[in-house]
Length: 357
Image (cartoon, rainbow, N blue to C red):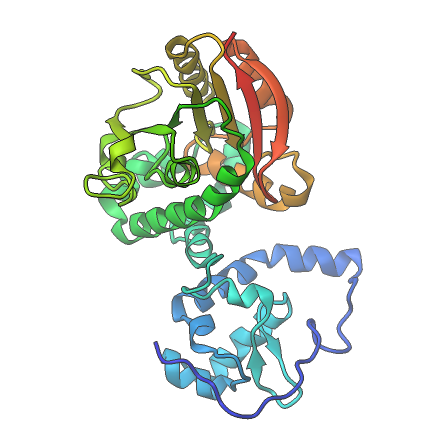
């Protein structure tokens, strides 16, 4: 996509606009929250239009951007004005628009891009299930099968191909971005073998093996998932000679022993699936093996708005739930793991260090 980079350069106004109330009264704040769908819709529209990709490093008017993204100039200005209220883009004194830290995260080429995460959280099916949150709260179960006539993943792959692609891109982006944080955190002293359980395409495993040349790795996930494993791990990849890729379901069996098992962001299913996975790890591991469980937490203050929202979405689509520290430690202890220290990985992930007795 062509990038607009006009020559005029002026100083951005503050966001929100000058004169706006920084601390609205409760009545206005509740009105704003009730209109939250408009904010989500505006973020989605900007991501789909590619506005952030079109905007360069110098200010551009809505009319100039509209030419690039094929939009109506007046309507695009209305969209940008709304986004500026939340710090996504900023408007200059002469009515042009510039990037902010948040708007850059909607760019496809930003190393910390949240473009596909933003699209995933606002996919068409989400607008069907959110209005039924009261039903899910009453029943304690997913409303997805009743709404769409089939389970979430069945629907995604059979009826919503574009949404499935967005899901895959979002999960890959998230995994790639957090993989290095995990690799930087974990101490692999004395570890010669590591396995990523339910590890998706193996980005965390690849980052660990690149940092620790003497360690061997195993990637376990469903056959269709590991078929798309990180190119570094597949035949011909630079880490392939130190990796085995095992197609399988960790809820059914974990058929190998290693020094360190990593379980990242997969204990969000129903309780029985979580318990089976943890029991399978304990059954497979030798005494003294390490188990590191990495999860978002709903009682993690820096990211609570995000994780509690994701927790509700999990209730709606698959009947799952995010964990509190207490609930996750409880599941680990029930499975027979000895829980040790808990470390922050980044702003929204924590790592629980465990040992198999």
